Image (cartoon, rainbow, N blue to C red; front, side, top):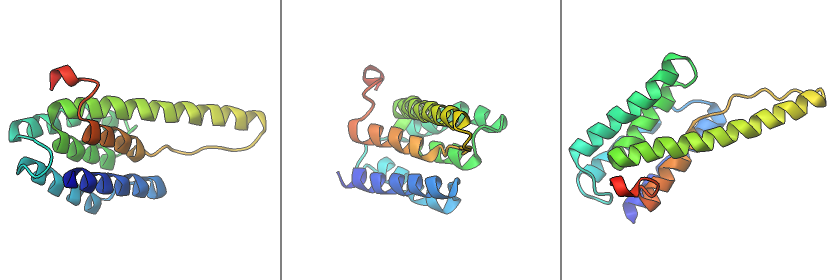
Length: 153
């Protein structure tokens, strides 16, 4: 329970900073690395080194194409890798799926707002930060475990 609270506090701070500044500083990722180390040490989440390494590789494999195409920031890629290292391989896949779903919903709302703004000749052009969507997926996996892919865990 303590690990989950610490992970939640860290993740919420990442989401808040990304929402305000549109970037995730490296200094904010260091506590996430400490959480991953704590999970590996058995303090809270049960995680082994193999699962953590595979999770990071999965996260990088899923997020680097977006970075290469210029659609995702480097901070988002690093943040997803750190979060994946905290939750393991199956958790990383679920984290990515849930975060993508949340970001897709936010993009849909943003698109709707822009369409309405065009009709009223107002201007609504804003980049969406990915951090809050990552936080939503991460919190879901931290508190409920891999529940979408429960049979794989």
